[in-house]
Length: 75
Image (cartoon, rainbow, N blue to C red; front, top):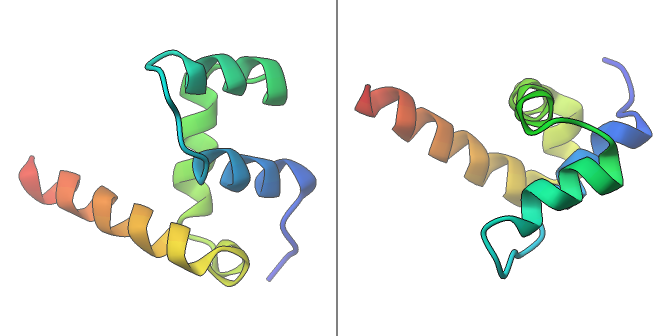
């Protein structure tokens, strides 16, 4: 197992924040991480499968895993 990079930790931190307006999160993704929304969600989805991410932010990762599985089951 590898370590989480600074970008990995930043993605998890950003995902764990509360957003007041619809575009605030997408704006923060661009401004703070320098990523497109599509790339951000690709990275986040890959992080959800890593044990290092689970160890770093267990509540967030488990919640996001449940959401992802619910969406898959709904298809």
